[in-house]
Length: 446
Picture 1 (cartoon, rainbow, N blue to C red):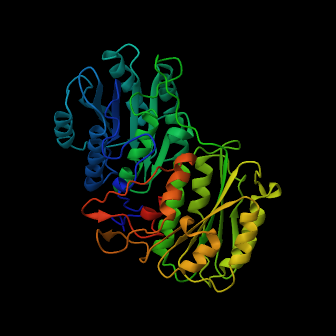
Picture 2 (cartoon, helix red, strand yellow):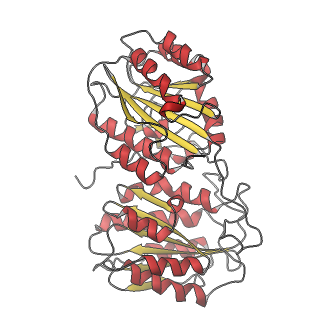
Picture 3 (cartoon, rainbow, N blue to C red):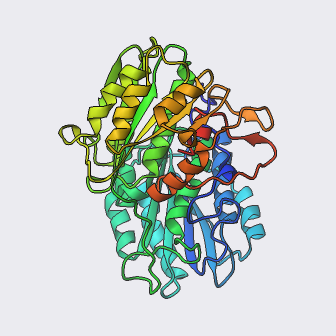
């Protein structure tokens, strides 16, 4: 079903990133020239094209727009590119958002390489000395021409490129456009563009929210992208039959989100994945994948086991995966994140104590019918437990399904240090709220 929203709708106001207020964004950003290059080809449904326009307007609202500050322009392309408006045309958020709303889809083919070549002259026409130049490319399919050389030429001009792929976009092509995994993003549908808005803003904005990241040597106020510390993370995920397939998919989407927001590498963040039911099962060890692309591909391929809930056996199984023979780095911070939706059918206290005795921090996330006392036995203390009472669904605010537990605060501090996700903002907003523990909307606090 085309309209099925595979990615969870996370209420991003529920938490903020370390560097960027989710409500205000980079309000003090000094200067930047930012172009959107959007795919308007015939393969994109009208509703999806509308979602793309909503995403652009949300991005625009994040920055302080002015003639001498942050400027935005939009180019749409299909077989040929078309300037919707240049970066010097509108000088207020209100004007820009109205112009975006008025964009009409072109239809046609997908000549991304030609569109990238077109951008070179557009940036040159309105260039400002020592001002960061950024290009955000959004496409839903494989280009009908070559993109590598055109993208390289833009980067040689000091233009930072973000490549966002939707649905049938080709991962290798996205990397060729962006030049690095760090600025390559993929979502399963256009509605999910909202999930990566803050990732991109986080990358653009400095830790103090006042300046922009620019290519090395091209901007006098260079502020390096936040780098995570060396960390080993193993996700131990309940795959029992009580979890609905749609919810298991959302758990996979959550894991993809963690990957997208982590600085993956052999000397940076390593992520391993184990799932369990009546028996535990290795999906991949910590050192198996050294890139975001490979991790995302591996997560997409896992299949639900569907049997009982032997959490204690799974904890015993997980312990050795932090050791060097299985890719662990005992001298770095190590975390085990346990996600379960029901009461364990075996003893969890002793195997969990063994893991914690190795210096590994455990967080326990309970979903639906999870037993809180068992979650405490797993994590070692209530302050490392988060739990909820609803399955992996979005709930209306006030329905009682919000993520609970003092573990939220520690998880928030942990994620802030890790850099994968940011600290929580507990101020509620009306309307849809983040789901209960276990939904990626709520799990995103890990």
